[in-house]
Amino acid sequence: MHLGRPPVTPGGPVNSPVVMSSTFQQGGRLMYGRDGNPTWESLEEVLGGLEGGSALVFASGMAAIAAVMEMLPVPGRVVVAGDAYNGTRRFLTDVSGRGRLRFRTVDVTDTAATLTACAEVVEAPGRPSGAPGQFGDRGLLWLESPTNPLLAVADLEALIDGAHQLGMDVAVDNTFATPLLQRPLDLGADVIVHSATKLLAGHSDVVLGATVVRRDDLVESLAVRRSLHGAIAGPWEAWLVLRGVRTLSVRVERAQANAGELARRLAKHPHVETVRYPGLPDHPGHALACRQMRGFGTMVAFDVAGGAVAAEAVVGAVRLATAGTSLGGVETLIERRGRWAGEQGLPPGLLRMSVGIEDVEDLWRDLDMALQVAAG
Ligand SMILES: Cc1ncc(COP(=O)(O)O)c(C=O)c1O
Image 1 (spheres, rainbow, N blue to C red):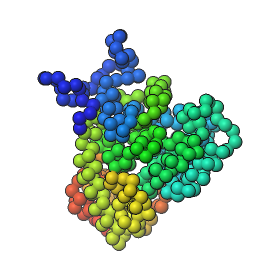
Image 2 (image 1 turned 135 degrees about the vertical axis):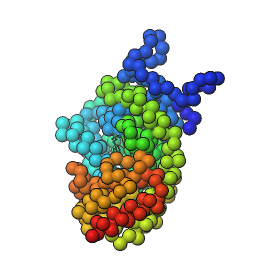
Image 3 (image 1 turned 180 degrees about the horizontal axis):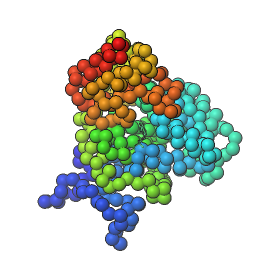
Image 4 (image 1 turned 180 degrees about the vertical axis):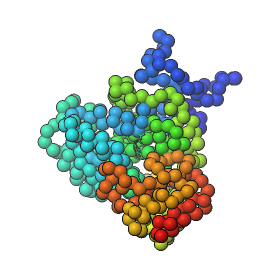
């Protein structure tokens, strides 16, 4: 609420302005708009404060992800959650196809298997170029929890600890949880990335990303990547996220309460086979989520009885929820994830729902009606 504001000056503005300037007058700290901007800095102060580190904003979540991967030596070695965000996996496939890194996918809910894969990657022949001790010199473990879209929960502390013992660095995509529900830097993570497009911004009106780190060497290296690759945020976009993030706590509280209620009702619905929500006591990651998170989040996934056809019928029948991708806005979004290339391994009837802040009874009436329509 209070970070990222101008200094207290009688008669001064309460909010940071949108600074639309590609260059700055000589002699000060800021010089050129690709290297820094006061509106970015206001947002960075907020995001850094929330995660407990130093934040940098990027043009998108993918730009932040790419900047982290670009810090790796060549060929980089990455172990990644098998159901990490599909853009992250597509990025890795693209880059590995050009020989710049090798990656292995793992089931991050299986801590022992994930750490065994990490050990194999660390021991694999063919040392990457680059000075020992640079980021990811011995490999990078890329984690997401809860995962997208299966909402599996990974034991972040055990995985981060184990990977560090092997000399690997660890990045966590904290988009789903937000720093209000989980702070991976406190659990030892080296880098956090965010698609600020989602809950941080909160209104489905802007695309923006961020990294947050505690290590000075990493802030500098990421700032260099941002400047050289040019994947910078517009000041206006940064301001929109700054405005959105002010209400993050009330939005998350309401959407999360809605998500929990819908998950409980869906679990009893005759046309639903499986509900994936870490807040449900029978979710395999429930106990871990209780330990690791301050809440179970705003995302619910569920498998509709009748597979892909029935699930698409639900998406086609909803009237209040919006059929569409993305997440974290004030409005409920629903989609069948299996419709995307790269998501073919998912249960065909799996719907991912980003729960918004509407009245929960309105949402339930809508969902129940759509499930009845789909069941014929
Ligand atoms: C978990 C997660 N990480 C990263 C991204 C990429 O972010 P952006 O779309 O802002 O580039 C997304 C986008 O959906 C996401 O869901």
